Length: 176
Length: 280
Image (cartoon, chains in turn green, brown):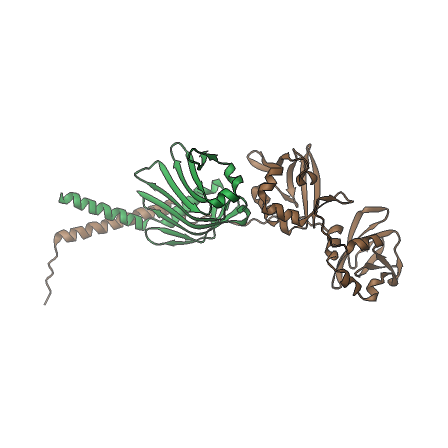
């Protein structure tokens, strides 16, 4: 029993130290490399490694070379068994404000060892609320959007491109 | 003399093992550091070397001078009102427009025989042997062979210059150039939904790369139909910028309210066609 307890303590120390020493900036650069072929570039950011997470401050998001959004903070927590990304205060570029409400307050993305083949995401903003699920094996993305009053009144054209489900929510699906 | 420390050997073994774990984890992180990139990807603004489309249009410059109120016009100096006093009028030319700023500016002139072939002249430039010397509010002074000559607006043109009413609809002027109201442009820029009710546009790709944007649908009688676009037209350039990405299209869209002219090159029946709009 004592040996098991000691092993668990050593394991805990091992993972804690591994998380602490993980080169999070390099991991972030690797993620940037993976996004590049999709035309997604995060630029003008300041990186701050706080030990157990990486904060990316004031980045600008470019999609297909088009400046798409200014972001307040992205926090990456690559904890191996529980990985989490939190994006706060996304302001879409003025070019898109005719298609989508410009302020997204938060996007939260999670992937954990308890459900390794799925990535879960949720978001809240002027558009309403959305939850998303990515199946990494089937390469399938599903987004369910609960639009706000603003979205329903001013951005009907954008909603029209989504399917409406039985609950009255809007669904977007993608096979990649 | 020496203090005797009694350290628990089990604790010492624990500390040693923890240190070994720390060294191993640090070694793993260094290996990861070697494996992954040390530098990220940043966005670099690509600046096109293709010059932007510039149009020195008689109509635009006339519109600019229209902002001079009639009151201001009546307060002009007598010399400005009497352009003819500078010399004999040039009878084979017409003054289509002028833009005066300080002692400089430009005039738009054409031969009466070829009224559509306008030329834009700055001070010191020569047209048909006449050198532009001075720009006044109602006309211009030229010199040729040591003598001064004047060129001034016709009475009809003079009336037009002080008519400050903006065109509200799309019009085609004498030169086949379409005139679009700035208010209409602003309205459509702020109401994108209205655009898609009247026109359908999709990207055209060749070998995975965008080569232009095709007009798939145009509502008859809509402002877009009056713009001269037709179903099947492929917009390949706008203001001299190739429409080979959404970036270029978005850039035009974002800056459209600042444009004074828009030139579209469309592929129509496999032939390039130029459509020019003046935005007033």
